[in-house]
Length: 218
Image 1 (cartoon, helix red, strand yellow):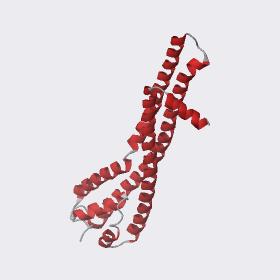
Image 2 (tube, helix red, strand yellow):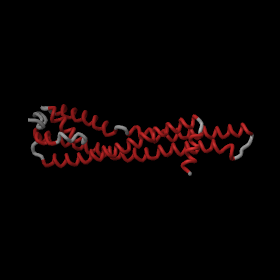
Image 3 (cartoon, one colour):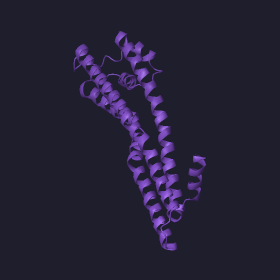
Image 4 (cartoon, one colour):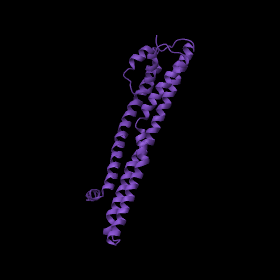
């Protein structure tokens, strides 16, 4: 019965409040879609990263490592390794520039869609607040029309305002929690990627020196 009452209040709300609720529904649906997508994406990525790291530590032949990790398309470490390997004979600053470019692309891929969660978390409470203010205005207009402040007069407007407030918070809270959670995981993966990038440079310098051709490709 409570659900029917809430549904009836929404159906009886004014056009402005309905538009506010539809906007909040849009943000909420897309936020939850991103939440599920990022969880699946980061879980698979971290699993691949661990797998690649084990293969990298064991491998003595980078050509074989390149072939055996072609299927690893999610982990930034494998993408860094393959990008540098495929460049061929690169040395010194050129190697660092290639790595920085790939790091930037991988960082953007890791952070993809997080801005929508941040936007949802920061704007939907205010959108809900707009609906709240509009509902209260309707309540006062009702009082003005009939000259009475009875519950029957003010209840519809107050109900609209409360529904808009609740909808705004319902959209914002999961988005904020998910944004902070995924941002932490993304930053952790970025640090791992940057450490691996430096490891590639260190191995290059240690094995061949700055003036020799890259060991990443025969």
